[in-house]
Image 1 (cartoon, rainbow, N blue to C red):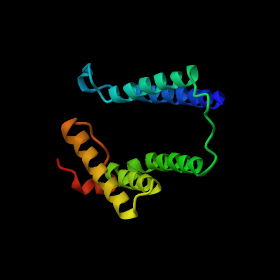
Image 2 (image 1 turned 90 degrees about the vertical axis):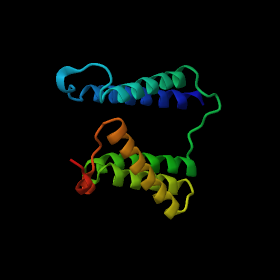
Image 3 (image 1 turned 180 degrees about the vertical axis):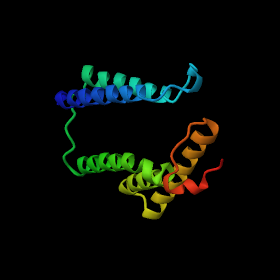
Image 4 (image 1 turned 30 degrees about the vertical axis):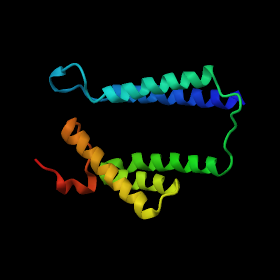
Length: 150
């Protein structure tokens, strides 16, 4: 059913527009510097998502059907995990909320709980270090704010 891909494509375009609009809400960098700023990556993601969405609308898969079986349930769980992740990002901080989100998603995909949450913890720490120290883009520490180096 090509109709399913088209519905999904329209929903993803709405998400891309909302994501791009959200990027415009970032405050201006100090000194009005132009170039790469905190909004650059979200703009890039919004454009890629928009193009991919248009592709789904223009060239849908003719044999596509909604996954109402276990796969559909897992997709709903993944979306709920990501919604909870965004809600916990500020209070728990990036590292802990990423540990929980990535760990839960890995576990749902078949990893043992220990391996899943170790993977989530490693992912949280590695991405935090890359963003904070290599890219100089601050991510929230939340409950781990005692680790902050001034």
